[in-house]
Amino acid sequence: MRALISVSDKTGIVEFAKSLQELSYEIISTGGTYKLLKENGIDAVEISEVTKFPEMFEGRVKTLNPYIHGGILHRRDTPSHVDTAKEYGINGIDLVCVNLYPFKETIAKTDNFDEIIENIDIGGPAMVRSAAKNFQDVIIVTDICDYDLVIDRLKNGGNTVEFRRDMMIKAYEHTAMYDAMIANYMNSRFNNGFGNKQFIVGSKAFDTRYGENPHQKGALYEFDYFFTTNFKALKGEASFNNMTDINAAVKIAASFGEANAVCIVKHANPCGFAIKDSLIESYMYALKCDTLSAYGGVVAINGTLDEILANKINEIFVEVIVAANVTEEALKVFENKKRIKIFSQESRYLVLNNDLYGFKHIDGGFVYQQSDSIDEKEVANAKRQSKREANLNEMMDLEIAYKVAALTKSNCVVYVKDGAMVAIGMGMTSRVDAAKAAILKAKDMGIDISGSALASEAFFPFRDSIDAAASAGVKAIMEPGGSIRDDDVIKAADEHGMALYFTGIRHFLH
Image (tube, rainbow, N blue to C red):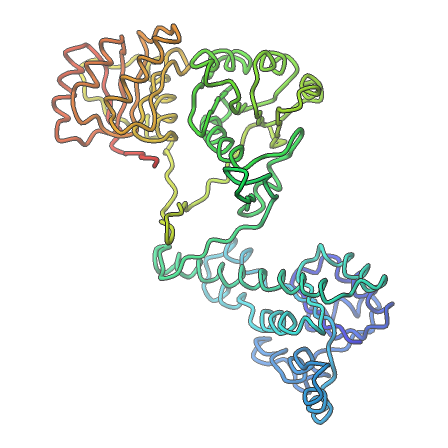
C-alpha cells in the first residue's frame, strides 16, 4: 500500500503520516512536506525517486507524471489497466492526501500579481481530481479534520466504497471552490467583479428543520465560516425563516457600533428599535413601537443578555433572541420555555461579515450586485435644504431613522423620537401609503409621534408625504433627494417649519 502526501497546510500531517506508516503504508512526498516528514523520523520517499525526474521550473512541475497519475488512476479491477501498469513499472497509489497552495491567504496579504500567480496550484488539483475519479480504488483526503477519521476507518475495516465515495464528493467540492476563488479574484481584478461567469460558494453550517415551509428542505451555507465562528446555538434549533429574520435584526442592531441598540423583527421587517442608556431601557422602548407584532418575533441585542433583561423579555412570547453574549443566569430564565430559541455571537457587540457582494435568486438565474452599505459620513454630510436646522437630538434621531429605513423593505418610512422608533411603514407600493400606514399604526398603538424625526430610503416624489408628516408633528426629515419635484418638497418643509436634509444616496431594498 502506498500513500502520496503533499500538503500546503501541514497541521497534523506528521501524526497522520506516522499512523499510515504504522499501517504499513509506504509514504511518497514532495518538497517541504517531504522535508518535514524526514525531520520527524518518517521514512518517506521523495517524489523524484518515483517520477525519475527532478522538480522543474521552480517547483511548477513535480507531480504531473505518468508514474504518479498512472499509479492513482489505473483501475485495479480492469486487467488491461493492471497489465499496462505492470508493463511500464507503474505502482499503485492507494491514498492521496493533498491540500492546495494558499491562494486565499496570498491575495489577502499581497497585491503582487507575480506572487499571486505562483500561488495557483496546478499539480495539487490534478492529483485530487485523479484520486477522486478513481475512488473505487483510492482514498482522497483533502481536509485536515478528516485525518483521524481516515485512520480509524483503515484500522477498523471501514474503508468501504461508500466511505471513499463521500471523500470523493468532498474532494470535488474542494477543487471546485478553489477554482471558483481564482476565477472570482481574476474577474474582480480585471473585470470589476462582473465577469462572464459568477461563482457563489458557501460551506454548509447546518441543516435547518425545513425551508420556508415544511415541504421544503433547507440549510444554511456560510462564507468564510462566519456562522461557525460567530453563531452559537444556546437553546433551540434555528429554522430557515429564523435565519432570515435574524439577519434583518442583526444588520440593523449592529449598524450602530457599540450603542445599546435593540431591534425587534417580525417577518424580516423591524417592528421595534431603540437606543437608550441601557439595553433593558432600549428593549422596553423598542417594544412600545408595536407590541402586537413583537409577539413571536426576533429580538437582536447589541450587547449582553443578562438576567434582568431576560426576565423583562420573558414577559411576552418571543420566538428568537440573538445577542452578542448571553449569561448563564439569563439562560436559566428561559429553561422551561420549550419554544424559544437563543443564539449568541460570543462577542462584546454584534458583528457582521460585511459581504462585498450580494445576490438574489430569480426564476432562471440570479441578479448579482455590490452590497449596499451606509457610509458613516452619509448622515453627517447630508445637506440641509430647509431654512430650519435640526438640533442635536433631532440629528441623532434622523441617523437612527435613516439607517433603519435603508435596511428595511422599500417603500419605507421610519419615525424616530428620543432614540426610539415610534412608527414605521414598509414594503408598500406607495411611499405616501407607507407614511400614512405608519401614522395610523402609531395612533392604534397610542403612540404620540409629534416631535419625531422622519427618514425615507428614497426620495419623496410629492409634497403630500411632507404635509402628512407635518400634520403628525414631525420636526425633521432626511431623505436622498433627487425628485423632479424636490423644490416642492423643500417648499413644503419650509412652510411647516421643518428641518429637511438630503443625503444624495438612495437605499432601495427589494
